[in-house]
Amino acid sequence: MAKVAVLTTGGTVAMRHDPARGGAVPALTAADLTAVLPPGAPELAVEEVCNLPSSHFTLGDLWRIRERVAAHAADPEVAGVVVTHGTDTLEETAYLLDLTVPGEAPIVLTGAMRTASEVGADGPANLWAAVRVAASPQARGLGALVVLNDEIHAARFVTKTDTLSPATFQSPGWGPLGRVEGDRVHIPWRLEREVLPCPRLEERVVLLKLTIGMEVEMLEDALARGARGVVIEALGASRVPPWWIPIIQQALDAGVAVVIASRCPSGRVWDAYGYPGGHRTLKEMGCLFSPGLNGPKARIRLMVVLGAAQSAAEAASLWNGSSRPEESAWR
Ligand code: ASP
Image (cartoon, rainbow, N blue to C red; front, side, top):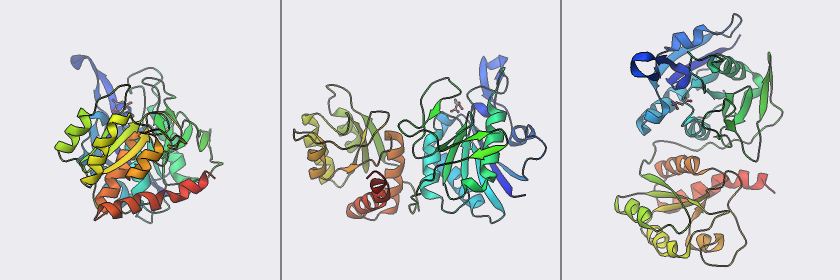
C-alpha cells in the first residue's frame, strides 16, 4: 500500500486543555496524533515540523513548512502528504502549497475546531479522512486540498467561514470538490492546476481592506515602510473611492505592484462602470486583479510572484499569464 507522509505543525488538533494555563495549549506530538489512526491505515512517514498555534506562524515558519512538504512530495514512495495545521491561517498555507509545490502527489491539509480534550473532538476523524484522501488515486494531480468535516475542498477556493463551527471550511460560490463517505473517497470534479516558480517569498507585501469613507493613510504608511506589493480588498467587484486614485498611481509609479481583490466573500473582480475608481480606472492605471482569490490568498500569490520576478513588468506578466487558464474556465 502507498506511503503517506504526515507533517504536523500544531493548531487546535494538537491541543489539550491545561487547567494551569486556563485554556487549551499545544500538547500532542506527531506520534500522539497518528496513534489514533485505525488498523489498516497506509504506512506513514511522520514528521513534526513545529507545534504552534497558526496565529503564531511567521513567514519563516510558512517557508519551512513548504520546504518540508516539497521534500516529501518529491519522494517517489510517497503517494500523498498530509499537513495538520491550525485552522486560523490554514487556507493561506494550503494555497501557497497548491501554487508552488509541483508534482502529482496530493497535499491534504487538515485540522480541528475542537481540542483533543473536548467531547466530540473532530481531530481524529479529520486526520483519518485526510490520510485516506492523500492515499487516494482520485486525488492525484489535484494539488493542495483541505479536508475537514468529511468534505474535500480545493485550496484555491476554500476559506474559514465560521469562528467556531466544525463545518467552518467552505468554498463560497463553488462548493466542495468531493467528500469522504465512510471508506470511500469521492471526488467528482477536477481542477486545472496552476504552479508558479517559487525561489523565495517577497515578504514586503501588505493587505488592506477598504471600508466606507476610508482615508489613504494606511497605504501611505505601507509605501513609506517600503512595501513592494499591496493587495487591496476593494469594494464590490473592484471599486475604490476616487480619493484613492492618486495614491494608487503613486504606488504604481514607484514600481509597487497593486493587486485588486474584493472584500466580498465570493465572486471575481470585474465591473462595467465608467465612473472614477471602478475596474476600468484601475485597469487603465496598471493595477493587477485577483483571479478569484480572497485577499489573504491574493497576498500569498503576490509574495510568490514578486519573489520570482526580476522586474515589475515580469511580475505583471507572471501574474496575468498564469491566471489565464482560470479566466478561460469562466467562459
Ligand atoms: N488557534 C488555532 C490555530 O492554531 C485554531 C485552530 O486550530 O482551529 O489556528
